Length: 223
View 1 (cartoon, rainbow, N blue to C red):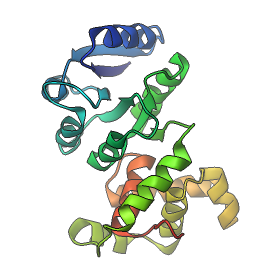
View 2 (view 1 turned 90 degrees about the horizontal axis):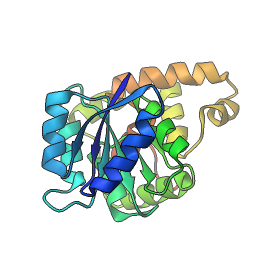
View 3 (view 1 turned 180 degrees about the vertical axis):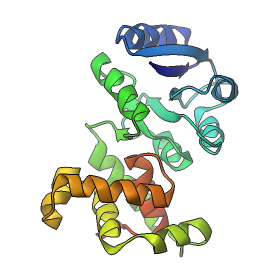
């Protein structure tokens, strides 16, 4: 079973998500939080697989909570649930360590699929805005990229040329199949190289791999 904590200041939203998720059969809602600090405490105590995180909540927003939760060892995946497809908070949440986001009016099946993907280490961004989000994220990072230091520099140096190429193409928004076509290799080869690269970088999913790529300058809006 996939264990989930729901975080939203509106009880009716939490109730609706609980019904949707628990009807899937392989998902269990193990806790509910009405603000960020409550979510941090439930993450520590319950150790769920995924936390659905609202970002705008009185009593403690989801952005600070996401950063606290993802900085801990063996952190759950954070799925940001937002009202607007290019909400300012989405970019902060990605930088804070979120593994993906969906819109609050997303189809129930897509919400269930998002939870399953994150539980399996596959980050996501809502498909309707994936490329827009990556492009905007890249633009915002462009003015702040500095020479990588410390763990980032060591991780970058450890990547093979092929691994770096794959991370760069991933950061452009390409799928595994598209990367395979660009590099004239099998999709399974892309998956293997990407898995090794993510281990070296120290991230758990594709979304955080993209965040890392722009942070260290391996990818840029000009690519």
